[in-house]
Amino acid sequence: MRIKKKKNVPSEIFTGSMADISFLLIIYFMITSAFSATRGLDFALPEDTQTPEIKQEDSIDVHVMRGGVIEVDQKGIPIEGLLPYVAQKLKQNPDKPVILRTDPDATYGDMILVFDELRQAPDKIDMEIKTISIPTRREIENLWSMLGIQ
Amino acid sequence: MALFRGRERKTAAQIFTASMADIVFLLLVFFILTYKVEVDRTKMNLPDTWIRIKVPEKAAVVSIAPPDSDPPLVIRVSTGEEMALPVSTDEEVVTFASTEVARNPNKEFIIKADDSVPYERVDAVLDALKQSKVKYIFLLSDQKTVDE
Image 1 (cartoon, rainbow over the protein chains, first blue to last red):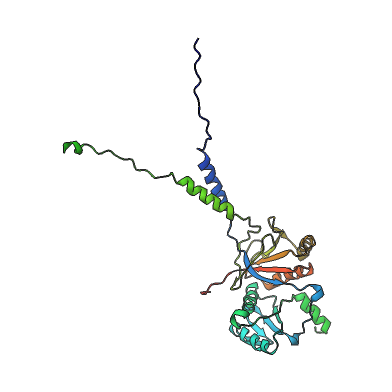
Image 2: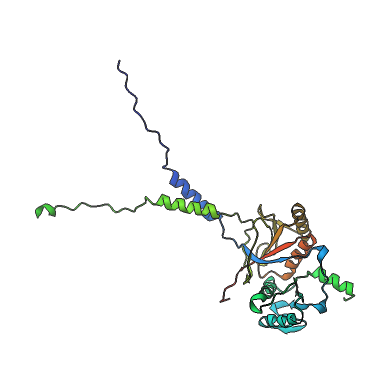
């Protein structure tokens, strides 16, 4: 009896479905990946041990009110006039801190607009504001009660 | 001459697809390399700023939903590695932030809020983070452009 020789079948990896899998993965990544915002304004909070007490009269008091109205040291000022005013004050005392207070009924956008403007001081007025303090309402109230102001 | 006047062979119209696999793989590699899981997917209109500093990866996120979202002004927190979860009180933000600071005293926090959010809510979050002894805070923003 003659035994038939087995045909040599070349071994190979089946790649026919690879394109389908790749498309599936692409669709998954396209849908789930998001070009999220990864930048913003930073600020460091002082540590308890090195917190200097800032007196209102030693600082520049920037008050953001409803509708984005700005008062600096109790005087109404447009946003364009903020940095020139700050520059004037910093010329007298370069260490003068800026206190940024915002009314509860103003929007976050109003506050950010002013904070961003203050952060641009090195570019716009060629001076650096060494300290920008953003006190919270509780901190302001605590200070007021310490000073006996209702 | 007659030899060349025979019927012309019809060539079937076809789209060349041999390079498709290469393109697909290229796209796949791009998406794999740039893929980032967004821990908070709350849709919001971030405030625009000129100054924008890169926020650190894996920073904890506290997001405040816009007033017109459903439910409005809800606060969500994330460690930066897991999906953001809603919290119902400001005390829960303090607890969350304190836990994170206890794990890593230099942990950075990102505040992600819509620009129409009343400052009162942001103030409450800031206060919670200050109470928890957080050292570094980033306020997420979009790039401001000249026409704005």
